[in-house]
View 1 (cartoon, rainbow, N blue to C red):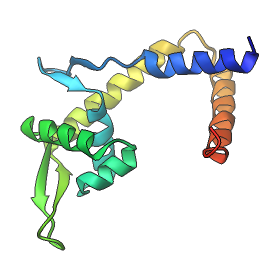
View 2 (view 1 turned 90 degrees about the horizontal axis):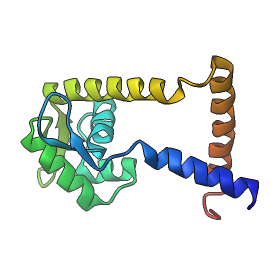
View 3 (view 1 turned 180 degrees about the horizontal axis):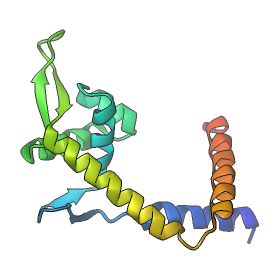
Length: 146
């Protein structure tokens, strides 16, 4: 097999290996959809977005964003408010509980990343980051072809 193909298989395994579709949320018995953290990250930086904007930013289906937001609203992590500029639509805002959950999830991701990359030296981590950034740039340049 070609070396590039083997590398790509490894990257895909790395990309999907850390995900578990549903797992208990931090400090609760409720399952957590893995996308919740991404939605909370987006809202913590850009509070007051429409569901469509959230879906576009995360490159997910609007229906998936709608379902996740409804669930998160039920958990008190986000709230919808009428858009003052267009009363027919609503905007999604992160709550204080959502901000706390976002920080907890971020800390969990950092801890997991430390465990995963523990076998590498700092120089190896630096080299890996540079190489992955090169590959990412090539993917962006060839987006239509890939």
